[in-house]
Length: 155
Image (cartoon, rainbow, N blue to C red; front, top):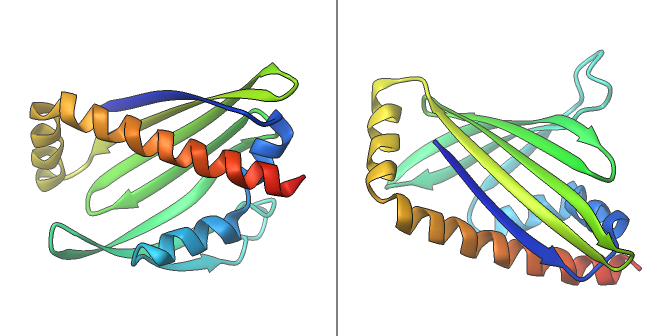
């Protein structure tokens, strides 16, 4: 299952990418939402690619997710992979400079269930696809606004 969304941000692409790859700020945002985040030291030969363990409540159960950066192609692409509860997720953020002070952000999230319970979850998401797509788009718009505000501060 895949969700996609697109937002325009009133900031230069390099500043948007800098705000997007400011991992400490993203970690603090997650912690404010009740997620416990622990960053891991880069693996040997991992070229300094960050990874995290995040613990959070989902539908009343405590879940643990392993998150890692898959690709960094500054200032255009940042891709993440996450594994939690039998579900593998890939999220890719692509940035495109529209003008010197305007950037388009495309986000694609792909869910791949690996267990029966994860398949049931994805099936229930498919039944509510329109509502889930709207929620995803709203969250991406909020995130884009946050990035825009942070990109202005990075000046």
